[in-house]
Length: 309
Image (cartoon, rainbow, N blue to C red; front, side, top):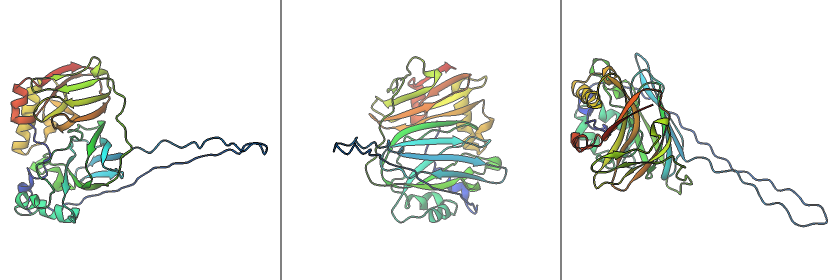
């Protein structure tokens, strides 16, 4: 259904397009302690009080205008469980597809290759594993945000949006490409407390009671095949109608924002036995969820459902 990690999928359509990208990075963390002296007649001292460790976090915010699009990327995460906040501050739907670049490859080099002639073939040589999928947040409609805690290996990543824009121009051609690094070292991030588990099996998706009320949920693939968990707010049509429209928009190079509904995030591909943690708050409405894996095979197998908020 919806192709994920489109770093290579649409590169061949971008020949001769120039682009600019904006990026920023920052990190925050602090530890501190206090030690109070005892009276002179005593030698004991109160124990050191230490602040909780800073989150192992990555923040990606999508911005757009009529003439340019960009990501604002911040954070210095370490390998392991990373708390990823994806925010769409624009007027159009956006994705944060990621791929790991090979050591020594720069964003400027990769950008030139992707936007150049035969970019599809040439970009493969610059990526660590072109077919790798990561359980980052799924496509978000305008004004939406979610937090996704997922495990990421150490490496230098490109983050990119290939959604079709006006006149068939992918968002990457308007500047929506950036980078971040996950460093080696032990992550202190712990799995969050949850309100239940979303189970992705090979035959269906089970959501816990009260899922529509929002909160934090573990999303776990209990099946034997890769699955994802995509959410959408419906607008007068069925969930299959919406995703068929989205798939058709990619094929035609037209904006998915014209489809009957709004994509509302979720978790990209999870391998068998893998988990991620989704934190969300959804506005009132009718919603659907499904796995888009297998070019429609998961949908036909029954990995689909609806709920209301």
